[in-house]
Length: 313
Image (cartoon, rainbow, N blue to C red; front, side):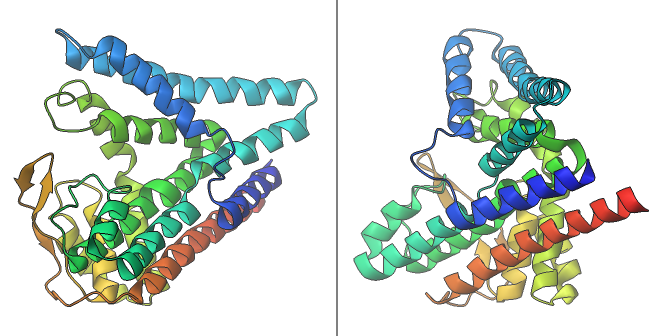
């Protein structure tokens, strides 16, 4: 059983490492998104939005766990173990997003350098929720690094964490929670009530992975002296989790993140993380990309080592 789990992990990790998200393949997260959009359209109206949003979230989260659990059990009990392993590999592959995240970050930097400020702003808008039409080059680069650090947790470390402790049902449930938050977990008029439960659940499930991500960033750059910096600066973020990977990356790069940004036409005053407001260079995208790869690879190795120790100890 442990060897199958390790085989699934290595296979899915390598598939993401080499292929990312192939555009031609039907994607699990697209299916999740359609289910959420359908439920939101039907339920997010009139009164009782908080309860309706909670109901939708609970149903979809439950299905995301139960359906793959029953499918894997059925395949294994009916002699289709190889098909069960293949299904598990594909599902875990769908739930990882590191290569795509790095590609998107590099694309913003490349567009900014070769096509100019307006094109860079537009390319950044594909991967962030803030308004980008007022950002200068420095702010675009900062926003890209913030997104890469935060999504290293959401898109890689958290899925691997929940796969390690709950298997394929666990990682697919996590991705449903994360997708719910990304679609309805906003604090605007439309979602402030309907998406409140989904946003809170997302905060809970990302609590440990976000801090693991921050610690691993310090480890791969041999900067363990930044531990207390991360604890101090990470809690400044409005999110209970996103600030910790951002603080870790700001520390190892010796730069400053955060600050005010526009969201939905409103200026949101956000505290700064770090104090060295130096210029971010174009070449530093290579450094951040390598950090993301190193962190995800190290965590994968740690999970494999723990499985060996646990099952052979």
